[in-house]
Length: 284
Image (cartoon, rainbow, N blue to C red; front, side):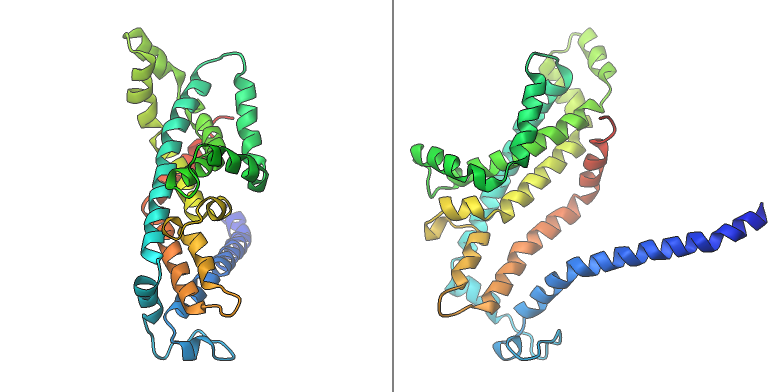
């Protein structure tokens, strides 16, 4: 047995080294643009536009960040993005949780059609929904308002949230529900005190996904939010690109401001997010 183990150990080491190498290459591929953006955001103009460009920063500066705060509408755009993303996240968590509980625990006519429609809504390209949603929001008088942006963001994220959370609820044993019903509990009690606490990682996962999609969404926000005081960060970045000038310093700084909250938020809830994604696949 010892001979067999020694014979296969080099192969395992080689396989492990190869996997680690691929993993490191993927990390480098993803991290390189972020690192370049961060370095560029603290370079003065003389270094930012030098040729050939380098990672080295000889005289770091916060000039571009100061310009964002003092000479642009970036603080307002940050607040708009935060409010819209948090609202989208909260609405997704509430509606998807209630709907997923119903789809998971009850059998009724049209259940399969609801699931199919939810999945179909997720795979449709967002641009297909642009004109109908714009007309609907316009008829409601919600153009250039935060609520007007929250509606399409919710519609974009809710189908996948519902599909993922339904799978997660299916993995929770029904025997727990039946035991509670035998003790006289109502459907709402079972949902709030038994199923929802067990599904907390899944609920948090869909909330995080909804937050990230809403935070970085550009298409609907650029069409619906036209006023200067209602624009979000992704839309605001376009303001620094004109026909005569591209303000790369401010663009890089605003890119950092847009990216850091997502990374920080994900780092805080990473273990719950992973648990939610893994839990959704326990039962198919």
